[in-house]
Length: 249
Ligand code: G
Ligand code: G
Ligand code: MN
Ligand code: NA
Image (tube, rainbow, N blue to C red):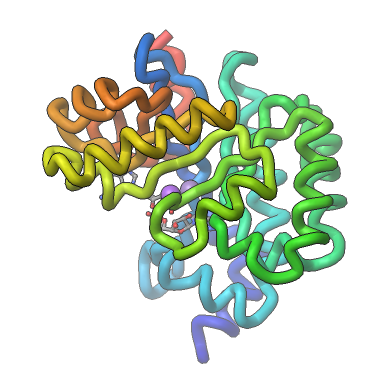
């Protein structure tokens, strides 16, 4: 379709931007990292959300250059933040299964000068489902360099627990559907169980989609270690994100 054709040109014209959403320590309230989220500023259609162009980019293969661009851009931006603050980049399955993914990550780090320990990669379990051996080996090598690997959208797939055994994730991000419903004792019980699994496996738990003070109180009580959501901030353009970090210190 037209959007797919537009996308190739759009990369070249710089129509893609990253916005950054803070992730906060559940205990101290300090900013620990920011998640980079892609936006497309289309000249005619205005801002297009990733849900509408990432699947297309995956079909056309453009997710590979687009994903490399995002890695470079996010690493470059993170260098402007205090050194304890990490940047998280979402990685698509198509992108990670292609040869050259590891090289692209290393190039983004080397090109920006960002230490590997300041980069987090967010992957969903679907990333690990096909060609899993090669993907896992690559993620293990990156992790050995200090790059953190986060399991995103946890609880939405159908075989999550087996992946927890196959890869030493640094963190598990509980899908926001569970946080939305956390006032419901059943949803809270699931969050508590995931926190327990995380503790036994040495993986911290991030609660995403925290929108209210009540939800924050409940995810804290259930033992989530980090929180993210509109209660703290929407995803912000680079300058506003930097100001947020500095103001929160
Ligand atoms: O920001 P928003 O809620 O619209 O993001 C919707 C989805 O798009 C999320 O699941 C997010 O992981 C995905 N997404 C956002 N930015 C990127 C990106 O840079 N790469 C990939 N692969 N996915 C992204
Ligand atoms: O799938 P992934 O976790 O990468 O998606 C992140 C998406 O979640 C972003 O598009 C972001 O805009 C969205 N998001 C972040 N915080 C909140 C929130 O508090 N409520 C809702 N509804 N969406 C959120
Ligand atoms: Mn994510
Ligand atoms: Na998520």
